[in-house]
Structure formats: C-alpha cells, structure tokens
Length: 150
Image (tube, rainbow, N blue to C red; front, side, top):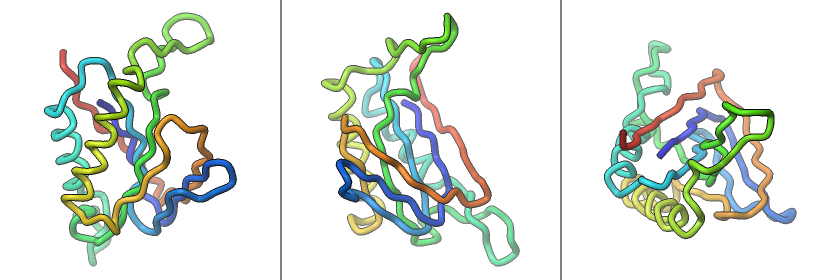
C-alpha cells in the first residue's frame, strides 16, 4: 500500500462538476493498493499517517500530527501510484490491485480513519471515478508512506 500525503491549506475533489469531498487545513491523501495488501499494511499506513508530525508547533518546528491540529483528511483512490515506468514511455499498471481487491481496502481505510479522527474530519473522492483534484499544498510538504510485503 502506498500513500502520497500532501499537507494542504485546502483541497477538494470534483466528479461530473459536483464537489464530492472538500477540506480546509490538513492532508490530501492519494492511496494506491497492490495485490498483496492486507489489513496489516492498511493499519501500518493508517498509524503512520495519523501520527505523522509535519504540522508546525508554536516554535515553527514540524512537531504536530493531524491528531494534534484538528485538521481534516481528503482521501482519493489513485491506482497510478503503482505505475511501472521502467520500460518504454507508456506506464504499466500490473502492480496496482484490480478494483475488486482495491475498493474494499480503500473503504476500510476510510472507515478506520473516521473511527480514529471522527467522520467530520474525513472526506473522500469516489472510488474508480474520473476526478478533478484541487489543492493548495502548504510548504510544500509531500511525503510518501509505503508498507508492502517483500
């Protein structure tokens, strides 16, 4: 499982001209799932995400997590995080899990985030939809979180 985490001052996702998810300060999280991912990888990524200390404290140091700040998280499914660009110029996506495997883990990830942070602090895109994602990256701060079976 891979997460691409961006600290934002605002982010939104639109499907067919309708905003389906929107947040202020917090994280935009793109999530990719591969074939071997299980609840174990999900919990490791979740734990790392919610305790990731990249928000500034009163001294201007990145010492606070999303738990500490009360910020929100916008979660967007992103199978292209598993793009293979080693051969040619057209990426392959064989490392990405098919929707039948990825969607339940994506939904479980969102459910667990809502359990940890509250439903009002977690917004989403629509799994498998063609989405337009807007964000204002703060810093910029962009971090990959990755837990995969060897």
